[in-house]
Length: 503
Figure 1 (cartoon, one colour):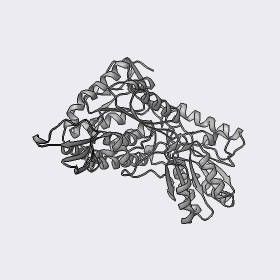
Figure 2 (cartoon, helix red, strand yellow; figure 1 turned 90 degrees about the horizontal axis):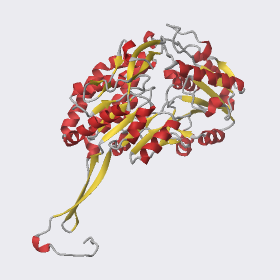
Figure 3 (cartoon, one colour; figure 1 turned 120 degrees about the horizontal axis):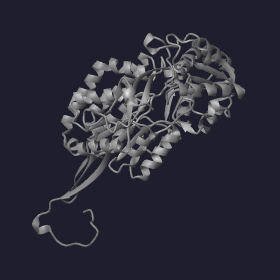
């Protein structure tokens, strides 16, 4: 923590379509991970700030709920156009605070744009149904209505895409939003809030509250917040789910992952090696969908490891603004934590094929650097396999058969994403039906669904029943109502104490 007076720039909250200082009692430091230098400070919310942000959302809800679907859609379209025109600005902010390379940041924004575009057509999914004359003179119809103020708590690794998994649908459906981004890279949230204001969104419909765990807990417990969307680690996802549901809220809490990629002997090994490197080391492995466990059948394991090693050797690590392939980790503390896992893997007997601790980055050497790291002969009890490392560490596990591989994957407590590389359609069909994972890729290493499907895992990777975006996301941010109507003639009115019968 540091005092505001010593900060060259301090990022405020965003409430009521304008920057808002709140209590201004505490600030946190935001660092450029490629240089290790302070970029700015950010206000950290006190309880009164949580109340103020939620109150702004609560006050705006009645007016936004009653705004016509046509008008809401016009605002969504304008937001989409502005974001597409100016996404380069947002990508530079993401790279400066998260560290991922510019191309990766642009890719993140493009995937978020898919959900915005899906939300622009939400009218089709908000339609109810109608049955004429379900009983004599009785009509029945259904409708979907917004919930009220909702909270979105997003992680550091995708400061634009993950919030856009949620808030476009929430807003299009008529809800109001309080977004609590990560305090590690908070500026993207304010940039998006300014864009919403420029697009014509009324004050209070989209608010940004900066803070730490106590700010999150304040949102989870606040009586006016009707639903919570969260992405982060499994322990925190479990806490969010248990706390928010105990306070009567809807929750979709997406947790951690240990994503496997299974390579069968008939696969194209060059293609598989490319995919393993891209999925294992893109964004420095700081992705919930990153491949961290490469499962190879014994007969092709040696050749596959050789090809992965060769491709890793060609990667350029350095400042993401210099055209490199991989940037730094988000903080020095996180870099040290990942390096501790590398040491643990060596101590536990894994073969260290590529040691990322020896990397020489392009650009400043003061950043939070750890290069691509490759382990071979990893076994299921080693910590590099059991734990979600969230860094550029790829572990190779060798198995004797497809059946052994499937058993290994299904025994893992996580069930977020999985990939299979093969040219055997029959095996692929069996795999996609039998694997206990929420998102499956066949010769696709990072199987993130397009926006009109839904994103989410199984087991310890999801708390709650609803996945993000797609039809499930629309249902999460709305609730159904059934209306039964009769307009009887005056002479038909009479007292009847029996249970209604359909006639």
